[in-house]
Amino acid sequence: MFDKYLEKYKINESWTSRGRTITESDLVMFSAFSGDWFPLHTDEEYAKNTQYHQRIAHGMLVLSAATGLLNFEPSIVVAFYGMDSVRFINPTFIGDTIHLELRVDDVNVKNDSQGVVTVQLEVLKQTNEVVVATQMKLLVNRGTGAADDQ
Image 1 (spheres, rainbow, N blue to C red):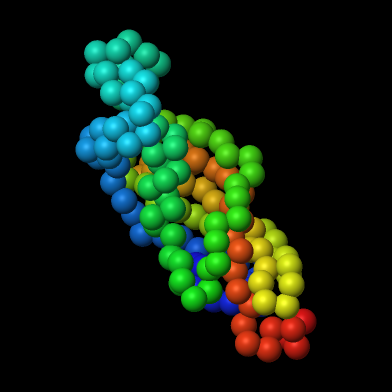
Image 2 (cartoon, helix red, strand yellow; image 1 turned 60 degrees about the horizontal axis):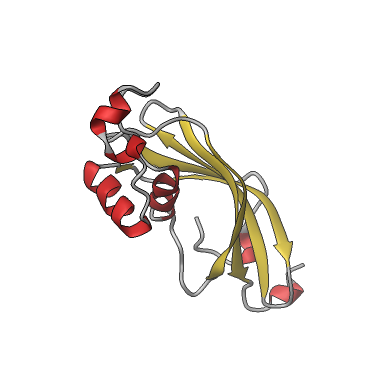
């Protein structure tokens, strides 16, 4: 999705990613990296007695894995610009396969060479339940002669 210059994006344009399965190793490695050993993610016996009846992936793990499903062209994407209204709506379990659905909400010129693309990003699992929803912003380059394309 993020492989074209700013002026090529259209409002309501959409994109769907490939899938990725969340594994037990993902939970262990994310816990080790982040220091988040909350028992809902790491203690099977504890998790059995919760409303989920099993361990769930960290919301931030799912969001981080989601960024790996995005297509970034380094010569076009300058930087991650931020997220608004991040919501962890449904649990992601070990073995769930996630994918992304994005829709362009806004395209904003910042200067002669760059602008911000805002997308509604949803992470869904194989049941088509949304597990994470957010508005994501990326700083992207404008194409050659972009000032003349307005």
